[in-house]
Each structure stands twice: as C-alpha cells, then as structure tokens.
Length: 187
Image (tube, rainbow, N blue to C red):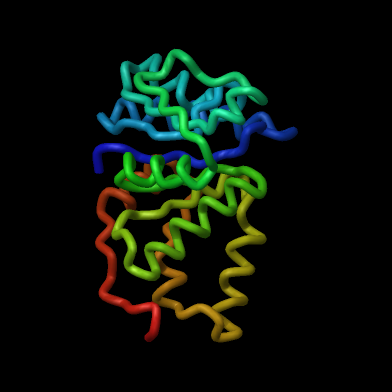
C-alpha cells in the first residue's frame, strides 16, 4: 500500500476520542510512509489531514464543488481535487487509494464503507477495507453483520473481507498483509 483512503464524518459528534483518533490515524499514516486520501474538508475530517501534514505526509483531498460552498475546503493539502458530483468524488478517492480505513461517521461514512466493501466482494477491486472500531462505536454494526451471516444473507467468507480492529497500528498491519481470498460473490 502507498496511500490509504480515510473515511470519517464531517463532524466528530460528542466524543472527543473520535477527533483524537483521527489525528492519530493521520500521523501514523505519515510516519509509516503512507499517503492519505480523504474528503478534502478542513473541519472535522481535516484533523487527520493536519496531523499527516505535520508529520510531512502526502495528503490528497477530494471535494465536490458544491461542498466547497458549504464547508471550508482544506487548501493546505498536498493536492486538492475538486469534482462536480459525489460519484466523481468517491471514484477519485478509490482511484488514488490502495486501501480504505473507516473511522466513526454518519450516513456518508457508512455509504462509503459499504460501497467499497461491496465492490471488493464483487471483485471490482482487491484493496483492503479496515473498520477502526473506536470506543466500540461500530459494535452494533458488527453485530448486524453477524446477524446477516446467521440469517444466511451474507457468506462468512464475505464477512471476513472487512477487517475490524480497535487499534490503529494493528489494523494498518492487517491491511498491509491483506490478500484477497479467492471467493466469489456467488459462493
């Protein structure tokens, strides 16, 4: 992996640990020699970008022009890519990344997670997808995925495509070692 796409919310909500972990992720990526790709904002999601930049890391932000009007884009990143639509944003983020790391977030973060995960399941890419379960935030989601397996709506092999960990360093290590298993969507 050379670059990791970090998906996170545009705000950190009411738990200060989310902001701390975002900064930890950005700094860890830079110290590991990994570039960061993210949504291009300067508010909450900019926390990780700032930490990566402070460590001398490469940061690529991708932001739709409409969001430039709504939120302040981060003009200090290594490269800021402005696109027209959210679809173009997601595609550009995917194209510039070799893996995906998901932090706590809302609808948009979950949508990005499930899109890259479904594309991995279908074989449209072979990049690792990691879910950083900060302070147990994603425990209910992991339970839901377990229920999908129990109800035979998701194969265990596909559930295993999502790497879940509570520790940044451990998750990045698992992502670096990821080898896509030879499974088909149609097991």
